[in-house]
Image 1 (spheres, helix red, strand yellow):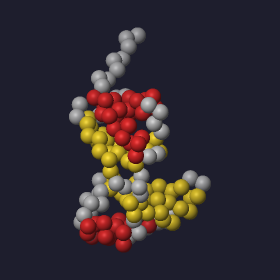
Image 2 (tube, helix red, strand yellow; image 1 turned 45 degrees about the vertical axis):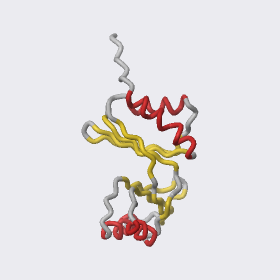
Image 3 (cartoon, rainbow, N blue to C red; image 1 turned 90 degrees about the vertical axis):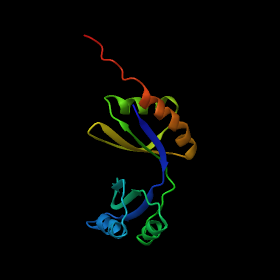
Image 4 (cartoon, rainbow, N blue to C red; image 1 turned 180 degrees about the horizontal axis):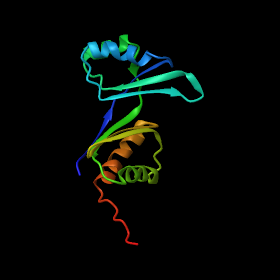
Length: 150
């Protein structure tokens, strides 16, 4: 099973939680030709009037300038983008490997399209990210557990 695990830079903006804020933030990036792979928008539990937007990738000088002008900044979040072939139990295998190693996740966002999956994992620090990378690769390459006959 092919898997890629790579560190990514998330760009972030804190906003008021009201209609149109996400569209307003994305509009200049769309005009500049950004081809975003990750867009996360969420409100803060307990502070429903506030929200955050996180994006990836913003790589060229032009897009960096556009993102900065739109109020986005490098979030300095230790994050990995993990992509590969999906199979039942994969999420459990990856999170179990991280838990056994004592690595805490700040967040996990994952989705499956067809037979492929993509996940963004956030960590407390870069040391945990580096420690997690080979564990994720190993867990993703492991053979799936066989169902027991009843």
